[in-house]
Image: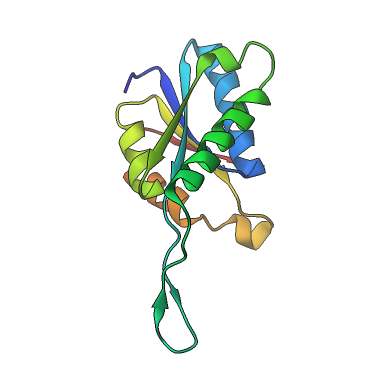
Length: 144
């Protein structure tokens, strides 16, 4: 990764879109670029009432298409001139691992903070918490 690249985790949330807007403004001002990364994976197994584990059946192609849509929709909402600074990326795997890998050597990792309120706002989601503890670059959390 280039040390002038800002990596942003993108999903379908307002917080992720706010993070991408923030990163694009920062990249423009600092002369950098943005890698908007959407990560998809199969949903976790669920426990049935019988104690049996059930794997939700979701088509991989559908999940990947959703991730591509998250990136394209978020980039399309950027102000004029900002989209040119953004490279969209889609990856399969654990979001924590993929984002940490993508951010290796980057200027910073920017994530949306999905929490709301004073008490909940003090807590971080598992992806943000893991990235904040393990990233080798600064991590910026942007509220929606």
